[in-house]
Amino acid sequence: MQTAPDTDMMDLHYQATADGFAEAARTFDEDEEGNILLLWMRERSARLMNQAFAPGSMLLELGCGTGIEAARLVAGGHRVVLTDVSAGMLERAVPKVSAVREAGLAGAHQMPAAHIGTLVDRYGRGAFDGAYSSFGPLNCEPDPAPVAHGLAELIRPGGRVVLSVINRICPAEVLWYALHLMPGTATRRLRGPALSSAVPGAAPSFLTYYYSPSDFARAFSGGFRVLGCRALPLILPPPYTAHVMRRFPRLFQLLGRLDDALAALPIFRSMGDHFLMELERV
Ligand SMILES: C[S@@+](CC[C@H](N)C(=O)[O-])C[C@H]1O[C@@H](n2cnc3c(N)ncnc32)[C@H](O)[C@@H]1O
Image 1 (spheres, rainbow, N blue to C red):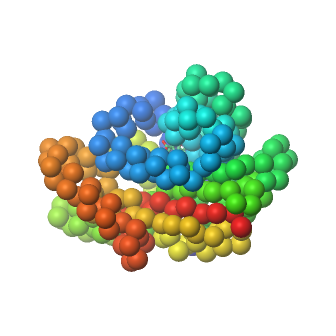
Image 2: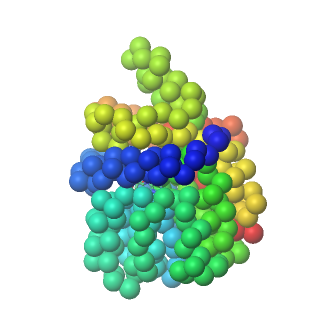
């Protein structure tokens, strides 16, 4: 885990991240629609959230993007407060979610996840039945501890948190880039934060931090207990290889089945492109 930079540095970091994702917001939904790996991952994350959140829950989303998850949860009868560091993302998420059910959108705030605790003044202590953050927003935070402290204030005892976070150890990525004779890229996650871009091919402009499940278990240990964790995915390669997987549908299905069988087993569950973790507020 990295030492927290000073406030001015953090403002610059969040601004660079917000700008990078504002650019991505324009094509985010179309890019995902054609990506069989991302859809496979989202299906598993959605399944876990459906089990974790009781019907009619009041939920908080960190890094909502264009509102894909929130729209689904609101359609399922939950109420959601959206947060994201990028105004460009919220501009898309808010109309999408309120079009599903206006009363389902309980609020929207432009803020980094690290500042989530400030929402206690607005919604009250323990106001939420659960929270979630899907597919990498928390990898843009240099330290998960302030997020954990904020959520401990906001989530009621017994409430659940579901997180998907880009993992530091991803054997499929190492193999993929080793086969492409790109050793530097193959080991990028192990070397600490990396300059990234949110749009494929764009110049890298903000930092991504890679975490292990134990980094998160430790950061959340003051107010939460870990209920489960799986690799997402373990054997299937990362989403940027979807163009290859699409050409081999039977291999994709076979690897997917193997993935589901192995991804939650000890050792395997601490690897993968992302990890998917469920926590309970104690
Ligand atoms: C890969 S997208 C995922 C979006 C959404 N969760 C989904 O599942 O489609 C990452 C999102 O995290 C947001 N984000 C990046 N850094 C953040 C931070 N520090 N706090 C909150 N949101 C952040 C970005 O603006 C972007 O909307």
